[in-house]
Image (cartoon, rainbow, N blue to C red; front, side):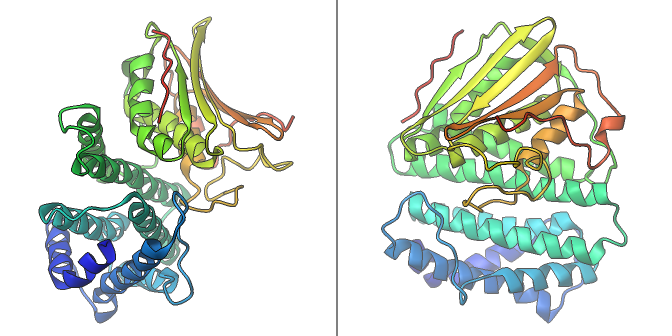
Length: 388
């Protein structure tokens, strides 16, 4: 079991994490409070994984109990890092370094991470990062403007997705069910490349505006890549992912931002859709406009929920895993392209999220200001069927 592996190799993994943290740049001030942060999280992670191993549930997060809850320790870690002058990227990287140390050490010793253990591991890491970043931002909010804080939260959320994809791809390869040279290997490569891009962009995270760097994109190819990344979760929950998009649709857009927007919509749809049902991804072109739709089977939204969905931190479902930033990230990317994002509620059935973009992206500088809310609608294994 992963919990036993982490217990047996505690000192080696924590030392490896410290080495990775030291590679980020010049040494920073340390304190006893800061140094105890990650070891405390490590202990809490082991406790959660022990409960994961004894649980007979699959695909549902194991919520830490009172003794295992890392909230207070994560908050202290974020508060102390802010006091010592750390950047938020360094706060996030500390947890990322520990995550990387665990996965690398497990891989080097052929330790298998089961899907259930992955869910528990990802949930615990996500919660700790969210609490540490939130406290860090609160400590520093007098010196930071609101837009800067929002971009920091976005960065933390965006890092989680490729880390999850990389872990899932590695697990599938390790189990021997797929080869490293196939689609799963390509998924792993794309996830690692995405992490590299995010780290590089973190150096510019303090900028007030999010520049759009456009290039011509084949929308069908981009959506197929997003579908490949969602395949593992779809299979584990017996969800059929239906893709309907022509490979003849091209548009000028920022590939990274558009991919992020569509990926967050698809991941949300898979996360909230009922097991053994379907998620649809459709794209059409008309009069130099591109319409992208993601339809799920979540059961519909509560009355009045559509107007708040795109606000950062809002979560309208009983499943509270994640930071509540996915739709906010979508909104920022779409508005940056002078487009619109909306949601149409299907009461008792599900939701349809729509992205409406111009074929030729025209960056809307004014719309990039923090807090801009788009117009929204009112309450009223994977099977790919791509139409190429």
